[in-house]
Image 1 (spheres, rainbow, N blue to C red):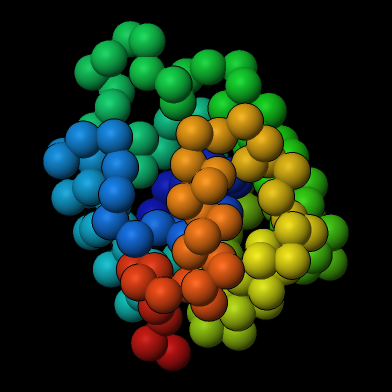
Image 2: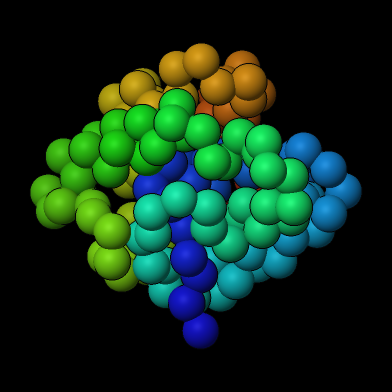
Length: 142
């Protein structure tokens, strides 16, 4: 199977520790974190993705806002520069241990965080990154 993620959720996955918008959101994200940790492939999508699923019953869910689409574009640009390859809708990748370590190092250094500006979780993510990602739930086994 493949996990459908929007580009900025590649950044969110770096610091996810089990907190979220609702209990259903956390249960869903925990399952996705487990799948990422097992090496399941990621398909980059436009708009709401597998992480957003528990929020989609709300027509006003933030995942549908233009500001979130802008986050996706910024994250895709920054990650593409970091990885030396374009991150685009339809791109398939795998967050193996080496890629995750590279992304986390750049995230902690602030090199791929422009998409995070204004996010309500930015302080929590900064704290997790500063702690060397202590408690982060995406931990590839490979």
